[in-house]
Amino acid sequence: MTAFDASQLGSWEQDVASLAGMLVHEVKNPLSTLNISSQLIIEELGSPESAREQRTFRRLEMMQSEIQRIEKIVSSFLQLTRPQKMERDSIEVSRLVEEVISRNREAIELEGVSVLFQPGKVSTVAGDSSLLHQAILNLIINGCSAMPAGGELLVRVIETTYRGFPAVVIEVTDTGVGITEEAIPRIFRPYVSTTEGGTGLGLPTTLRIVRLHGGTIMVESEPEQGSRFSIILPAEGQDK
View 1: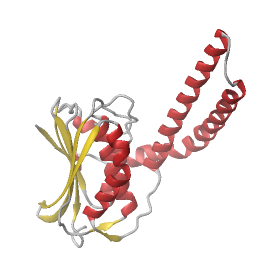
View 2: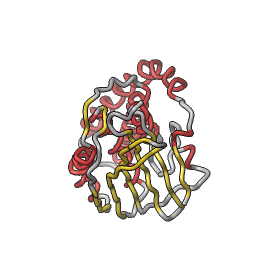
View 3: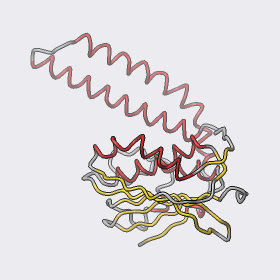
View 4: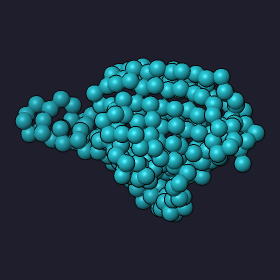
C-alpha cells in the first residue's frame, strides 16, 4: 500500500488566490442571473405538450443543471482561496467527529455506504471547530465518492506521536477504488479529481484547513483496495 505525507507538498495558495477577485466579479454574478432566468423560463413553460416543447424543456433543464454545477465550482474555488479567520478554541476531537457523522449519516447511508465510528479518548486540539468540521466532512464525502457502488467507511480517532510530538489523528478509511501511486501527490492540487463528477477542490481545501491548524494529512492507498486519509493535528499545547 502506498503511503504519502502531504507535508511534502509546497504551498500553492498564493498562486490561485490572485485569481479569486477576478473570478468573483466576472463569473459569479452572471451565473446567478443565468440560473434564476433559466428557472423562470422553465416555470413559464409549465408542462410541455408537443415533441418540440419537450425537447426545449429538456434542453433548458440541462442548461440549468450545468449552470448550477459551475456555480458550485466557483463557490468551492472562492472558499478555497478566501482568507480564513480562525478561532482558537479547545476542541474535543471525538465529539466533533461524532457530530459531523451524526449530521450526515442519513445522506451517507442513502448512497449505500455504512459508517462505523470508533471514538478515542485523546488530547484536545487548539483550533476552529467550524473549519475542522468542514475538513472532516470533506474527507467523508471524498471517501463516499470513491465508493459509487456502496461500501464501508471507517472513521476513528486515535492519539499518536508525529515527528516527536503528541498528535491527534482522525482516520477516514474507505473500501473504494483506491488511488494509484502516481496520482496521490497530485490529489491535493486544485481541480485534480480521481472520481467522476468531482470538482477537485475538496482535498485542497481540507489540506489548507489542516495546515492552518499546524497539521498535515497522510494518505495510504492501493488501487481497488481502498484508501485511508489521516488528518494529523498537534495536541493542544504542541502546535507551533
